[in-house]
Image 1 (cartoon, helix red, strand yellow):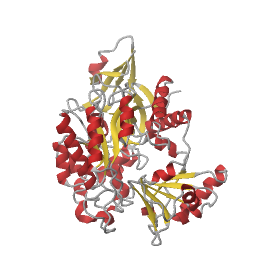
Image 2 (cartoon, one colour; image 1 turned 180 degrees about the vertical axis):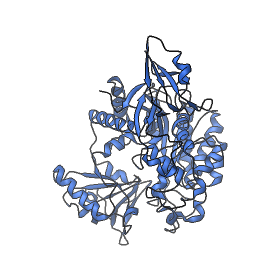
Image 3 (cartoon, helix red, strand yellow; image 1 turned 90 degrees about the vertical axis):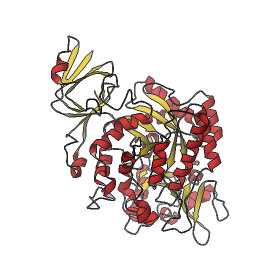
Image 4 (cartoon, one colour; image 1 turned 60 degrees about the vertical axis):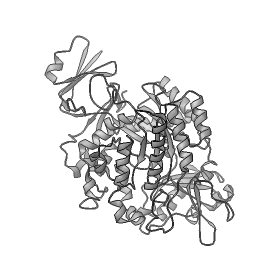
Length: 542
């Protein structure tokens, strides 16, 4: 059966035909795009006509990097993301235990705290969590997900004392007397995470189903997600099986491109040995790149920098791999037709990543590797130029400045910021950019990303002139980054990213014309309907 949509304001993101009024869908694909008049001439007795009544239509949004399963898992945790003080965190923890009648001795897990929104900027410690409970081990993850804080009972159960060494790639934070403060950075987080129980496959399926349906309400039809280490067992076979069963049960509300976090040669060898590599899968689920977490984040001083932190002399951050270790993993993936995506926030981390990419390119002569760096925050213009020369894709995350702008100048100083979070420069240099949210770290709503990227202001409208406003983007550029840009990241620009004949019929209807809405009013726009393969995913059809 044909579906003919007419009388729309269709923003196609197709450079050959940027605007249209109508399109035809057959068997889940766009088959014709044009004016209402010319496409009405194509209808026959098997055609259903839908009048868009001048609604604004876009291709379905595609988030180039997020943590879907972690986002879903977080729904069962104490939500600390909107809290503005240590006292509010304490109240929320106590209320959670009381409301859910958590038995003594059972772990209490929370997520999303950020001390930069507290009046005193107080970083949580074990004493703060002890005020919630001394009878429950507690672990609360910071919003950046690179730091956790645990209470005294948790430290005791983890066996962490004055003599416990830092794990490789991790830091156990201590007070001047050498006692653990409760803060665990980077790989030290897993000392706590490894104690938490796994979810069953059925629970994982329900989590993913719920999260995909929720994200459809933001117009998202494709998700490039890092799921493998959400639970302590790090059992990717269970997660892959969960997705396969969701497909068989017709419960997929998004197309998934799995970014495979496999941070050791043993795990990568085992994965490749099972026949998995980039592109394995189908239209609803594919294996994507090898994902490697190379450094930390700016907030907890763990992004890996070439110069010490301005507010923490002697600290250059944390790097998870030596150059040789990173070289070996990247080369192994490249030789097995797997492209690579590395988390890189600090400039020293990005240089190390680019060294590995350049070496692998030289060795394998891969003409279209499309390796990437996600975040690209404390950069330099020379790093961005090098990315362009090596055809490295920027999985940029403009929404991150909503929070970072309140702390990052303290961390790295004004001079370094002049070449950081440089989204305008990336485009001017011709870098390929696919935009991301890093959800649940930041808002998954692409409209929020557009507001932040275009205005360079936080949700309150600060600062009035914009934060380093020379790096502002246009709305059209943000839309392209969340459509064609992200499709390029997954080698799918021929089937996704624009409303064009031959591509999946993934599209979204907005409440207003986003190209004519004043930048300050972008947050007023909302998604009215979302379709994947011509099937309505939001609101869900009865």
